[in-house]
Length: 152
Image 1 (cartoon, rainbow, N blue to C red):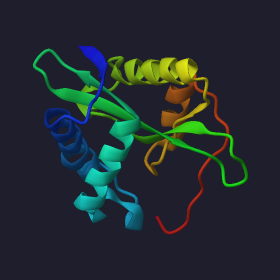
Image 2: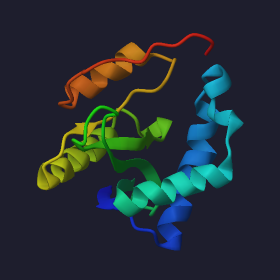
Image 3: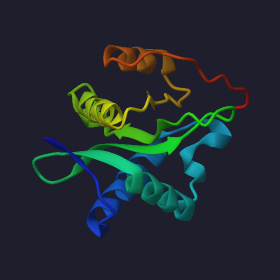
Image 4: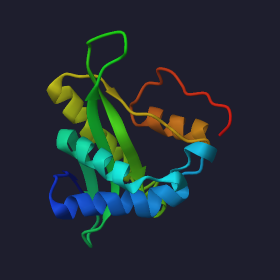
C-alpha cells in the first residue's frame, strides 16, 4: 500500500468518485442527511474542489483506491484565520483497522505542518461516533468540539 497526493487527472477523479459514490454513499445513513440523497453532480464538483486544494489516497497493490482524505482551505465565520478542513475522510470497511486511516491522517498532518495551518477533521456520523472519535484521538488528533443533531 502506498499513500500519495491525488491529482485532477481523469483516473484519480474517477477513483475518488467511485470510492465515495460507490461505497461511502450506501454506508452513510443519517436520515435526511444520508448520502443516499446524493446529488452526483454536486458531489463531483466537491471532489474536484478538494482535490484541487489537496487530497490524498491510499492505493493497494492492485492499484485500487482503498481510502482517501480531501482537504480544503476555509476560515471561521468570525475570523480571517484560515485552516484546513476535510471534505471527506473515508476508508473501505475491509481496510479499516489496517493503518490506512492513520496513513491518510499522517499525510494530512504533515501537509498542514508544511503550510503552517491548523487541520480539522470531523467525525460526521450517527453510527458509533464515540468510538470513531477515540480512534481519531489515538491518531494524534485533539477533540475541539462536537456536532449534535435532532431529526437524523
